[in-house]
Length: 276
Image (cartoon, one colour):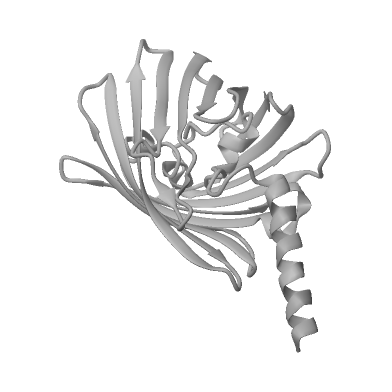
């Protein structure tokens, strides 16, 4: 019995160690809209998909109708890095609101996330959003820990073709567990440019409070009225991305993938529905 317990504990240690090879910190990876992933792993919610409200709270002001989004995928082809998310965004009196839930990991290690987002458009040039996040970390046979975070985002119209967008994640500096490990604080600033109605170009700068900054850039092009293609690249580490979006009446289907210099491909699949 003692031998089996030792083997079991050793397995868990090795498992967590392997997981940490791909995760720089707990809750480092937020739910991602496949359209944004395909455009260079950006986190700005450029396509107004409900899943994008997790990272980009100001994007909630883009939803003039109720929108439901679900997303699923697997990073680097590893089952322990699978993720599923769901969100609902909708207009309310004097503003906009959204809520969502997400899970990352498997039965041995999991990161669950719940969010409540509120936003308001203060003028035709400025929108502000705020997200209340709850993080739930569970490691099998080790226990569970939770923490609250606050995200703040903005969307500013500079002219008819240029927008400045961004957010500050975990602005309250949350910690988790008895060791009070700090959760990642991330500042993102992005410019979106629309040279023609059928295309967007995005440049995003991401700065973590601990790690080096990362620059991402990408674009979207409406190949057909019902088909949009995405492509992009992110540096540090270098990752190239691509994706496709299909719109059929009120249904939106997204697929995206990203490369890695040392690991297998990562895949995202999303489905959205707009109530008009």
